[in-house]
Image 1: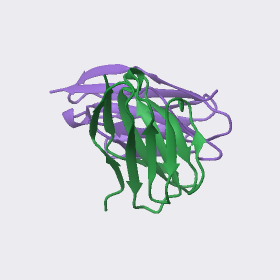
Image 2 (image 1 turned 180 degrees about the horizontal axis):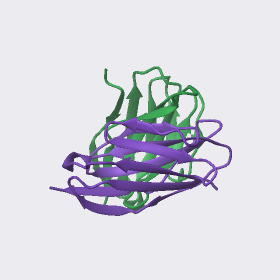
Image 3 (image 1 turned 45 degrees about the vertical axis):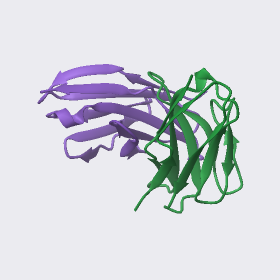
Length: 114
Length: 111
């Protein structure tokens, strides 16, 4: 039972390079999320997708794009990486329901932009 | 704007101590408050609270919500070194889609 799987686990980029972070969940959840986590700032929402085919901006969307490829997969793209995007990125999916409504997280991607 | 504040931001205790972590929030159309434990990697779910005054308990951990005063506490009794982690508090609104996280409390339990 894999849950939420993120790849890669680590990445180093040079300023201006592009890359895509991949996320897949096998729990048949509708909603998926991308967060970044910086020291002392908790988790900040970049984008989320309430269902296949829809995406919405979160708190810090600038410099990022997302694609909800299908129900399982939600990718995050950095078109032109900047040092300010050095962070740990987490993908999550949501188990909905009045009694649940719990997010499950992937193991994270540690990204350094030089 | 929805906001979550946690205190203290950092705490160092010795094994066997009892700790109380605080979370206060402002959110339009509150639906639920969640506590997560984050060790080295992904946050893992601890509790979800939706009603005031009802304590949720799991082993040495317990949590309670006060919807009138807009806060929650997480208690850990007889702490162990394995409790060392960052504890995150998050709130959701009525739509249940938008999660707002606090900065976390970093707990260190010394042997």
